[in-house]
Length: 327
View 1 (cartoon, rainbow, N blue to C red):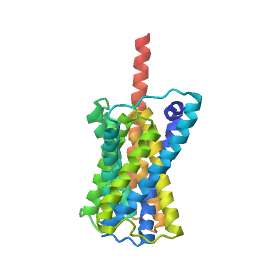
View 2 (view 1 turned 60 degrees about the vertical axis):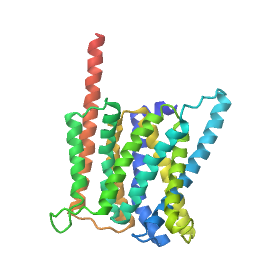
View 3 (view 1 turned 45 degrees about the horizontal axis):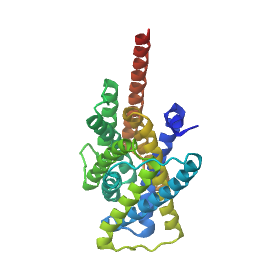
């Protein structure tokens, strides 16, 4: 089955999107475990950026190597060489700055100042920002009543998780703001990657932008922390390899799903990131469940269902209209 057939098929699209969000959800507790293994304090922002840079630089190299193997196999069957689009360097660099550098510059700071559960749910706001950016950039992503209701439910989950456990006072710290900014850059980067995938192979594009963004994180972190501020052991190396793998696999799967499907159709799956992140944080970090966590999770899951029903209903209306027109 060709890539387009798999990623446009309902089963292929769902499996790929769920797997990508599962990998991203597992990053929440894995990063905090990595902080503990390497002795990275919550205030050591420069060390956090170096750690993030290692992760994405390694992930980029993984993807570039894999893409080279895929391209070589493809050329053996079809020796035609596709010409490179104009302004290639600028377009890859722009995507690297938004989707990797700025997103994870904010994300690593925010996660160090928040809990794994809270970070997982707040980053679910990527779905909202992705749909809004798609609307602004394309103009063909309409906000139906069903989508609007689903987005409101999900946003309510993002807001409620910032409530103090002991009362109704709003608690929005610098860590939460950084996580929200990370979600904004993530949604923007996803839509931009979808646009660039029209001219560039997804694996080629994703690998290069991740490597470039990761190098930028290393440079800005090494300014204060140095190029090698960590003492590595087997556990920390394996953890870094896993984080690099989940980044390479997760972004590749998601960018492929985004390339072949409308933004409104697939954005709902991003709500699964907080679901997986909360479950894995509770399991791996021993973070306690409470009524606020349960309420927030219930709202984001409800948002998934409402947006999904809205997309299905919209597609049914389009099919009926086309059938009537044909008659």
